[in-house]
Length: 287
Image 1 (cartoon, rainbow, N blue to C red):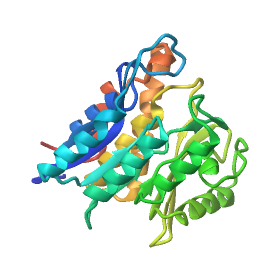
Image 2 (tube, helix red, strand yellow):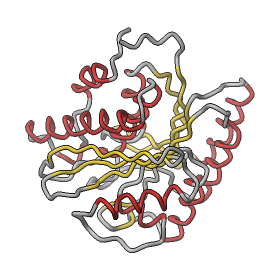
Image 3 (cartoon, rainbow, N blue to C red):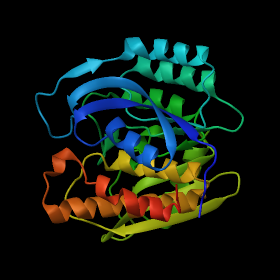
């Protein structure tokens, strides 16, 4: 059983929706429950998330991001990990690059979730040029967590839906690592129609792993954020990349299944909250 004496600290750079389970409203509770101090740097404030919901308000907080960064630096705050997600503009990409350079240490971890596309298409607010800009951010990361669509866009390749071959998935991860990151966790992988999961690759040790869960009908918003947050919780609690990826698959799949069985409106996100005790059990955390 893990008995953590030193509190780990993460800078989470995401948007914040007042309603809807994604980005900071997911990262903050999951990482905090896993015993990790989580410092929020909001990229935007929204009344709800944007997936399938109309009429939401949107406040761009780009102007506050550098003042946050400079104030934190003046306090000599140090981070064990930096975790970036949704970024709404080229200017924000540049600010986050500067944040990485400012707070990078020899032993901290920079994780980039290149949120910009799914199901073969860019999100409506982005252009193909934004994918090129996101590639520059990923070059500075230690670990990236793209889905298949985002992976192909980072590489400037065309997307095709699965099922995929193991060879294709492994080759995709190796070419992503060639951009700069040491590790890749590729989400939305399916080798068989009835399964969905992730693949991992560690460049320095040539380690490859897969983790699977049964497919659940429907499309569920915010699951990428649930997954990446649980993955980082595992890594900062001294789990291997393969084990962290597996734990995060279990947690995300159970959250989706719980939501499906409750017949909750899938636009509002998944029920990750009631699964936190099982996540902590898999992480072997006792406080």
